[in-house]
Image (tube, rainbow, N blue to C red; front, side, top):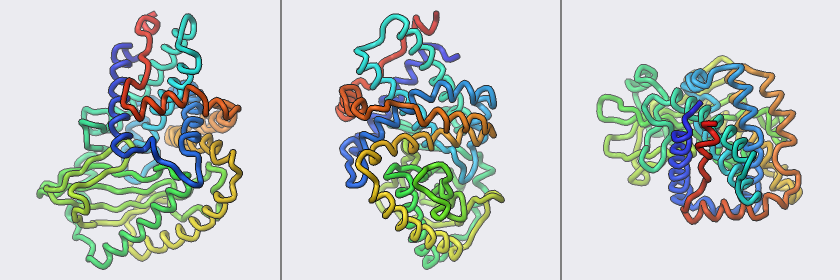
Length: 382
């Protein structure tokens, strides 16, 4: 089990990078006419807080954390880093909401919290360490790379001739339509979009893989078979010049400066039941056309949601980040447990997630102050 001092150092580092990344994008201030963004997330945090320790224990019985991380290292896979981020952020935010509501920790509560939190910290750190190809656990204020592939996995794409300009433009438009579909499927949560790299090409260029996954979701209750696309994920291999500055963030996406820096598109990829394969732009446009039709149907369905569901959809939305860990571990019994217990996780009374605990934690996140309470080191040692 992780040392208590290391657990607190991990919590502190994660909190600092979370505040930096969130406030750089002013995410706390975001609103939507269709969704209660803060309410759904506060509910999701509570759900992950309730489920995370039990999930870790069941996953560890099925597969070591290090092997989970190794299995995540590949092209167009899910879970990817955002699932790890939501797992840890959700647990820590849900924990802090509970601590505020309870007026702090004392006595037996302190020992139970220390045990739960050390377990979650330990699993998260071990998976992250095995997932990345460097010494870091996650990107943030001082770490701007997201390397998950070994050089040999990248080399295959470096020698490719770039797509002609006309095909590259068509591919860009098609990927944009598929990104809009992913945003709609995930209720305006930035799920499914993943950028990893940059990887040195050896000739001065930087290679970035842009992926859009979860295109055939079978867990979220508002996505029917009619809206599932014919592939699980698509991807584009992009080459940037050495002068471009590429920053990968905690949400699994990236930004490039100067804005609009030119790049070459080297290949278009898809993953389906047969694995990863290269596809042409015509097939990509076919996926995009299906995505456009599905997006329109989903939007009409979501627009008809009742007001309460615009908050409570956060429960399946956040569990959707946990299910892929059960699947990559080939542990259907863990997925069954998530489905059964997830329905009851988090508060049943929505007034709780609109109360003092969530309000204070969101305010701390916006203000950039101390975000998460440390674990009691003596309780862990005991």
